[in-house]
Length: 509
Image (tube, rainbow, N blue to C red):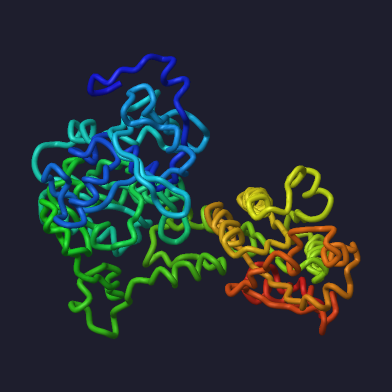
């Protein structure tokens, strides 16, 4: 291990193991690579207190944002900061591969059953694996590659279209600088692109850039835009950047020269991109907004060549096919007896008849046997059930199938987690609330569950002695007490057609 911190193999073997969240994993990689220097680990309470009061670490070093690690309280309980053998926590990636050992120097209680841990981290193994791993160079390696002189840094957190490429070319030429393009891969990119798709899209524009070095950096955004911008500037400086092209003028406080690009527009007189005010209004075409780009892709319209190089457009179309060809999770939620399972079955039949998509129905005996066996009616187990269904559905949608799910899913947070899983898979998520009233569901009571719950023979029954948190974010609400199942199915089909997820011909004439 680094810094002379050596522990016997048996201590590491017996140490507790924890997988941080994606943003914390990104911070961990930057800590291990030296990009966060002089920070060598997750902050202690002393660092956090000093940062909030003075904008500096406890040792007086200026620093822009908290870099923290939160773990479940149960994980922290077994750590003892007074015993070197008992204060080691092994941090792993999402696949369970060891990445680092945390030498826990500080433990404190957090919110909602969590604890904060602070202390230096030390690399274990080869640093893990990921797409384009060869582009994840350390700051020391990158600085050794760069030629002497000025280095213009660009953080490409979205694909580079012609206006951005023109801004980069102008700034590089004006400075006489070498170009370093840093592609953040710590989270989903703007426009819903997975990190590997963003890398491909940026590389597709490489032949339209000045001489360039391209690397990936595991940066994840912070909630505070100013702090986020300051952190990005600090990381850029660690990689050898002297000038940064950015719209955030606040970055000037991070020790870099910041170039704020002027807005460009397309001049249809000669096909060039120039400063907007230098083009007569009748000859000016403004750059497409992100919403317009998304709309083109969602509808399957080609991105115009005047705005986007064909190679970049090709990569974006591959990564974000039209909605009608993209993966989708249709998630129906409602009380037992509301009709959601029957609607889901009818919807699956209609989509299978069309034959355009691969359809998977996650309901009934298959889910109970393959995913939910052994689970109880406790809140934790109910959330676990919905999480399992959401994960399977997201994987189906990742491969551009349609997953139709219809658990009761009584809790809003579990439904939100299922939505997040679909988004992380690059898929759509449509939430249908089957809002049939409780009294109607009890009258139906085909399985006798409500009667058993009212008689005290069954506990944890949603709507009786366990709450149902009605969705406030449903894309469609149907009530089978006043419409037929067939009409409810048609309403779902109509929604999917109107929003572009299925072809209009699926609806009856």
